[in-house]
Length: 315
Ligand SMILES: C[S@@+](CC[C@H](N)C(=O)[O-])C[C@H]1O[C@@H](n2cnc3c(N)ncnc32)[C@H](O)[C@@H]1O
Image 1 (cartoon, rainbow, N blue to C red):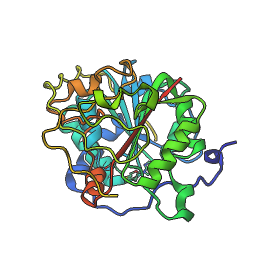
Image 2 (image 1 turned 180 degrees about the vertical axis):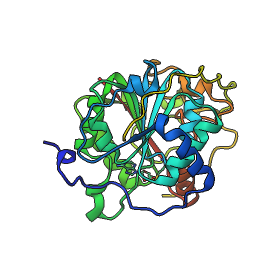
Image 3 (image 1 turned 135 degrees about the vertical axis):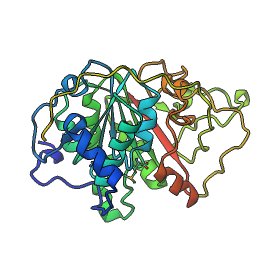
Image 4 (image 1 turned 135 degrees about the horizontal axis):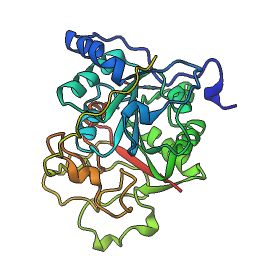
């Protein structure tokens, strides 16, 4: 039995209040029956992702999407993959559904509840990627047990990834970055692809840009990329059955791009251009690590905290 099998799982989130606007509420009313998944503690009913999305495609799980802007941007730039996004914050659910409706995104479904409870309902090997962007940092030592990236959760997430699938985590809290790196590296089924392990890095003299660092120290701000226009979203899909249910570094204004962006798609080889980054366009500008800047990342950067992305691949 794992921690998350117990009747009272340790919560990784703060209860937050938030206002549900008319826009959010309207989108929730209209889209929830076809695009929503209710997550109930203790429910282990397998979730049929093919029925939920109305197709078979590689799938990305985004945990703790906040208001969902980055989820919508990535999904719009990546129509060949399906995005299952999970959050506990109700206004965020409403906002993401509003974005899905406004942008006519067919490849996003939204789950409400505890992400780790949801993960139990997913089949082993069913995910192409898992995104955990700026999870709640729980900075006090006595709260570290609430951090999302801890060994039991990592083992479960790894199990849900296909072989070669990627787990992409990011944080602006240096001590969390360090513990994340240790926890991820300690998992026997994962290996690091970003920052590249020291042995695969080019010699310093050969670098032309702020190459990935071997330790999860502060990284440069993602260089803004102007990708080609995003591909149109796929044609309407059949609706699934209703579910019950130390100082930050300033962004280098005109620096050359870092070494080849890491593969956050799980599809390219580890040195290749990411498909996601290459497709970025109207949906937003993907950074050097293949994702747009998030709201919480911006807050951390504005507060002077360094940003760390850690990307591991399932063996
Ligand atoms: C610090 S915010 C980051 C939001 C967004 N990823 C960003 O970078 O702007 C962390 C989010 O994760 C959500 N969260 C934390 N633990 C969660 C869990 N177990 N299941 C679902 N959402 C969770 C919180 O509600 C919160 O919105």
